[in-house]
Length: 168
Image (cartoon, rainbow, N blue to C red; front, side, top):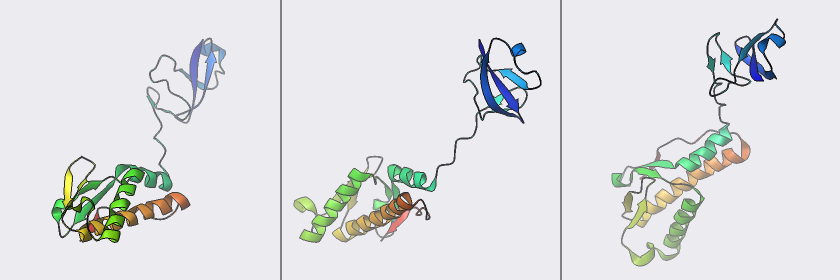
């Protein structure tokens, strides 16, 4: 038994199992496909000699927003270019940013009584925030960016926020 693809208008419309092509409806175009790797399936293109996989589906806006959360966000600082980098914005990273930000609001200083605060980018490089004001600007920019993505995920509509995110 072999697998045969029926071709209509340059596209595979069905795949059937048969003992040979001769037992299939001869008014239709059939091509044996079980000898090919990967084996073509419904939706594949056929130009008369070769098969082509269909284009992957375009992600929805909500899927694009969810993917952006996993990628992180590029941040640029006009006042402290050493802070420029791509930072993680997954749930754990957001929680850490919020925790440091809250500590600053409550205590007026960085945790651990340090004068400046290091934060790792997605590549693992440390960026040193020299002031609590700069960290708060960073936390606010991240929160705004994430909120815009969350709104798109929740509603399926909107515009993806631009990058890089600018902080003073």
